[in-house]
Image 1 (cartoon, one colour):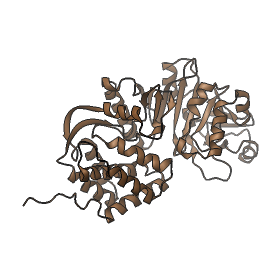
Image 2: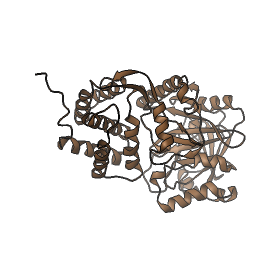
Image 3: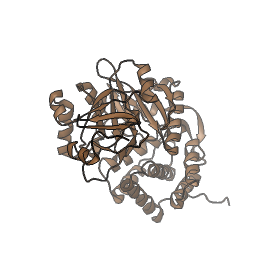
Length: 422
C-alpha cells in the first residue's frame, strides 16, 4: 500500500465529514479528497461520513462510485447524505438532497431549503470536492452507463444503512432517470431479490401503470447483487393519508379472494418469526392470524413500507418506490394501518404510550371486510411487521415492542382467540 499522505495528515487537512481511512495493500486505485490527499485502493477507499469524534458508520461502498467522476461531498443536516455531481443543477439537488421530513428541526429545514435553492457557487463552499480516479467503475455503474451513456450521476447515503447507497443517473434536464442499489448482507440480498420480482410482476398490472418503477437491469457484483430501476421525481407526499394516496391504495385490490389469516403475506411474516428468537412477537402474530383465518378479503398488493419518504406525487398521481417489503398477495387495510404508525414513529418520535393511543384510535374505525375484533387483529399483525421493518433502528424497535407488550398485557385481543365448537 502506498499513501500520498499519512493518515494523520489526511485527518488534519480534510473536512471532518470526508475522512479517508487506510486501505488494504492489494488495493490499487486512486481517490482524491479536496486535492489534499491521495490514497491508493481498489475499491478506491473507505470514507467516514460522520463528523470528527462521532461514532458513525463508514462507507465501504465507494467501489460503486463511477470511475473518473467529480462529486461534491455534502455535510449532513439530519437527512440522507449526498454526493452531488460537480456543478450540480437545481433539479439534481431536488432529488439528492431530500429529507425524511420527519427528522428535521426548523433549523435543519432552513439548511435543507438553502442547499436545494442557493446558487451552485454557494453550494460549493459547504461541500468538499471528491474525485474518483479509479480505472474502472463497478458493474452497477457500468449498467447505468449502458442505459444512459454519458449521464451525470449522484449518490445518496442512507443514514440507517451506509453500506447500501443509491446511485442516481440524470437526464439532460437534471431529472432522475434511473437509480441503482446493491445489497451485500444475505438478508438484504433476499429483500432486493424480492423487490426485483415484485416490480416485474407489478409492471403487468394495468391499474398501477405509471405509479411503480420499471425494473431495468439486474447486476451481480463482488460486493453484492445490484438492481437498476426507473427513478421518480415529483412533489413530496403528505404525512397524512389524503385522497390521492387512499385512491391509489384502492387500486391495489385485485381479482380473487383469500383467507386473511392464511394469506401469503401473513404466512411469510409467521415463517420469518418462526426462524427468529422473539417468542413475544411470534405469539402476538400467531394469535392475531388465528383470529383472521375465517375472514375472506380481496387479494391486495401490499407495499409493506408505505410512508411519505417512499412516495412522490406527479400532479396527483402517487409514484411509489422501494418495494423491498412488498407482497402481491396481501390483504386490504395493511398499508393504510402501517402509514400512520410509521409516520408517528419517525415524524413525531412517538413514545410507546402515544403509539398505543394511535392504535386504539385506528381500532375504533374498522374498515371492510373486518369486524371490530378482527380489525384489532389486523392492526396487531401490522405492528409486528413494523417491529421487523425498524429492527435495525433500536429506538424505534424498542418503542414498537413496548407497545405490543402493553397491548398483550392489557388483553387487547382477549375476545379474539378462537373458541372450540360446543
